[in-house]
Amino acid sequence: MSSPYKSSSSSSPPHSPTQLNENSDGAAERRLREAEYRLREAIEELQRRQRCARRLHPPCEHADESCIANAIGNLCQTFLLSYGVRVGIGIFLRAFKLARRRSYSSLLDLKQLVSEKDLIVREEACRIGLLFGGFTGSYHALRCLLRKWRKKETPLNAFLAGSVAGLSILALDDSNRRRTLALYLLARLGQCAYNSAKSKNKFHLWGSHWRHGDALLFALACAQVMYGFIMHPESLPKSYQDFIQKTGPVAPPVYKAVRDCCRGFPVDVASLSAYLSNRRDSNSVKLDEFPSIIPCSIIHPDTKSCLAHNANAASATFRKTFPLYFSLTFVPFVVLHLQKFMDTPVHTCWYAVKGAVRSTTFLSAFVGIFQGVICLHRKVASKDHKLVYWVAGGISALSVLLEKKGRRGELALYVLPRAGDSLWYILVNRHLLPNIKNAEIALFCACMGGIMFYLEH
Image 1 (tube, rainbow, N blue to C red):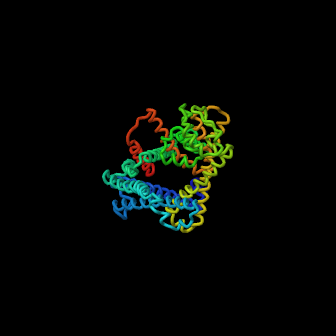
Image 2 (cartoon, rainbow, N blue to C red):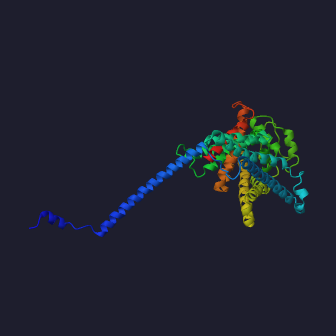
Image 3 (cartoon, rainbow, N blue to C red):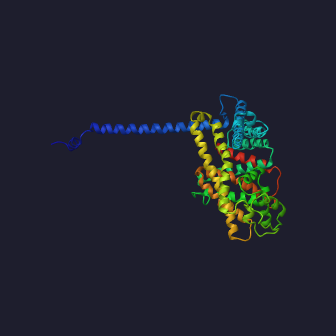
């Protein structure tokens, strides 16, 4: 009789080769995971030590050249690019002007095409080049200086370098242009701050998820700009006033009469009479020193039909502004992407023409709609009000929907500083804001510091 121990041991079969292989595979997998975990910890420790070493002795990003050579190289490169873009735009506009006069042979005459008498861009191009080139060169130099002086790389370095380099705005001698540029950067800085906060779920502006929120912002900005142009033209830069005046079909004496009528001031009848004397079908127009509203017969004396006048205004705007938009589209692309232009010149020209046609159509529709709203108001109302022009500017801005989706936000941020500039001037004149001398320089420097902080970090 066999022992029970012997029977139990004989009843359990030995481990099969398959089980042995599974056990060995599991142990190998565990050892592999442990090795991977230890390797990951070692890499993280090495990266942590490298970051600490960089903070103590941060290296410059231009290892192949000295800090001074890097700063001077950036200054020269940016200066030449900015100068070339400005001069190129001036040459293209001059060429379109000669072509409009049907003086095609003069396009090959350098004396008529690029002479200093007819093409005054030398000083302006140099100032723009010094603005951008000076900022780029001084920013890189200050970053290296702060990195070596503070012996660490922090976000404060980028902010300080950008703020001090912002003094390059002094290359522009016109305080109005400096203020406009400072307000433009303020709008961009607000965009950066909002996008950063939104990406971190810290702040979300109501309505920012709207599909046409950019068009709404553009409409509000245009409403303020057109109100400022009609009621407070001095609140806009002189160049911006001239652009709106040349683009629109209404004469300056009429704008002044509308402004005086809305304010309850006596209308300059003599100036209006001198303007209307050279117009056809203007003998029957009755002029009053205190009219309740300036009629359409004075706004567009050459055309009795308001609809025909608005259509003519839109078509005239297209013809006048197409050369400008084509130059702004074509020249920067060629200067900044010369190799791509050399590879596909036909595609580049077609791209520039298509973009210019679309942008010019948008601006032409803007002018036509604005004039249409003004004429419609005169059909249904007997008294004028200054807010009509604010509303007309907002409604006409809906023409921005003709532009590409990506361009609408850019246009809104382009017009917004002009609107802020106009509102700033009005509030200062009404003593609702203090008038601080050279405030635009300080604002520009602070905004550049903030933008460079967001750019770097």
